[in-house]
Length: 93
Image 1 (cartoon, rainbow, N blue to C red):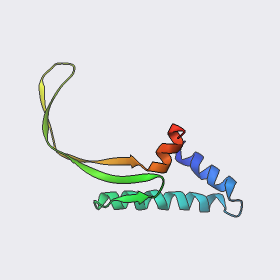
Image 2: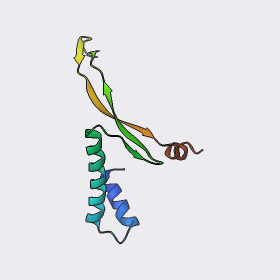
Image 3: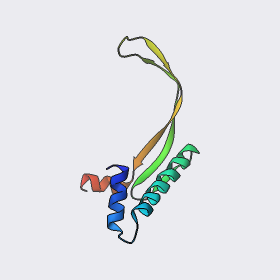
Image 4: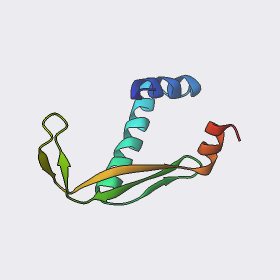
C-alpha cells in the first residue's frame, strides 16, 4: 500500500473527512514518527509495533564486483519490531 492509497482508504472509511484532511492526518503522523526517530526517540504503537534507531558500527566491507576492501562508515538506521497483535494476525494464531 502506498501513501496515496492509505489516504484514499482513510477518506473512504471516514466520509466526514475531506480528502485534504485525510492527507494532512497521514502526513502529520508520518512527520512526527520521522522527527521522533531523528531525535533518537522510540515510537511505539500498541498492537502494531515499535520504531527505533540502531547504531551500526564502522566496518570493512567488500566490493562484490572487484572483491576489493571498502571502508563502510558508522551510521544510524531505522528499525521496526512488530507488536504481538500484528504478529498474531499475520501468522493466523
